[in-house]
Length: 180
Image (cartoon, one colour):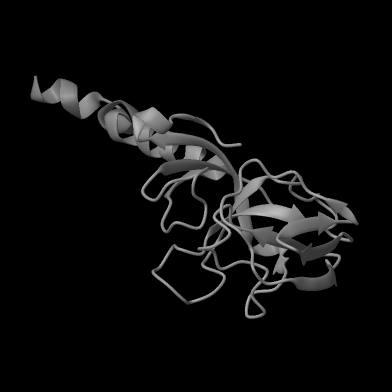
């Protein structure tokens, strides 16, 4: 019997280890699981939810995220708060858009947005801002508890800093489904 094991190919001996590693590598090329932190995206995404992010590379040449799409950034875009708090936000302004906030409403290219996903009120107005060619303007859904593009320390963010779009909430099970 010892001779039989010696005649097995490397692939046969280690396939139980090789296949899962290759599968995990392939999966992480296209999607990445992250756990949401902070309250900035309430009620759309709660703290502690396991989110599947579809990896995308955005640029003026490769395309931009969709308007009102929830995206995840590679790193926190500001160091304030806990690590991971400032990583998921909703895209409100695309390259070339004009964004303005007045009387608690967000205006994109002069039109007031209907934002059923947003909670809280915005007290401060923001003067009209033109989004750069390779930039996006992002807001958290919880307007009272979000550090986002309204903050002058953040401003508009580079398309290259986006990891991808938040697609599915996996955990907890009562939150399972697509992210809107």
